[in-house]
Picture 1: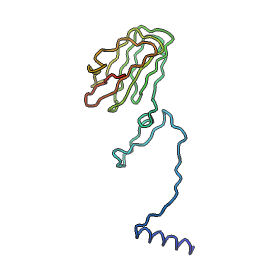
Picture 2 (picture 1 turned 180 degrees about the vertical axis):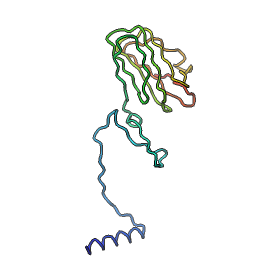
Picture 3 (picture 1 turned 90 degrees about the horizontal axis):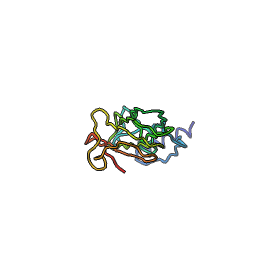
Length: 165
């Protein structure tokens, strides 16, 4: 008990004197993260009582993907947070409609690819969004070529999806 008291007094005096006391702390570390995992985001380095979280893809470059096997013409609205839509139909499909996610983040990327040719596809922006008419986005995509990736990023300033390579 006497040793503990001396230790506590020593800590108190060190704190008063402004002396840093080194202490080893073991933190629990994740050995791997996956697309279903979330991490806490501290906006502008200022913690608050309202915790914000993002999918690992938002910070670690892990693609949050949706794998789908359409059997006939399809209508897909991309879920929020999805970076890559991978279509794997049994064969060529004649028609399909793809609508971008409702709440993208500024700079969020989105790509789509199919293992088979999609002879006619309609790609729509979501409510209060547009598909950009600048750069690569000037020509609308009307078909998907098998095993070709088509990509966009979202610009909050433009409220638009801008196509890129």
